[in-house]
Length: 171
Image 1 (spheres, rainbow, N blue to C red):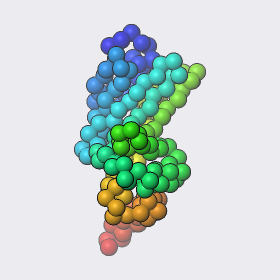
Image 2 (image 1 turned 135 degrees about the vertical axis):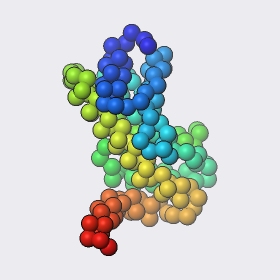
Image 3 (image 1 turned 90 degrees about the horizontal axis):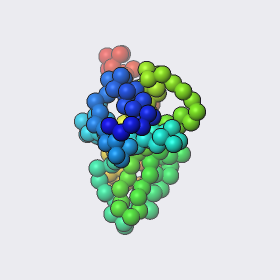
């Protein structure tokens, strides 16, 4: 690994938080094994000068150029609804990514605290990717409008809570 102290701190923090990692010190990138098998891995891009790490999950389906307007509309709606993550599209490739940044700046944290903060961001991007994965594919396929997909994503946490209540009530 390179001698970059911030990269070393991030690696130590994520490893101490129990995450499996593959490090590319030359690219300042970390592949983090995801708890979600459909995701595979989360990419962490480390920016030592800013003391920041951005986590990405790449959507498995590329967006055809003809679907850019609808996917962009979903991305705009989704990002305005999310507190801890965002969606983005690369119009040159049709690639969609879910991302969650952590910017430390001058804040100094011990490895354990930093690990908890970084894992919270990793889990946020994983949850966002899981919530939007099928909806994004439905918009790409023309099966859902961006408005309906965004509404379903917005309602998903309430539906999950209702399912838990129903399970507790034995329904």
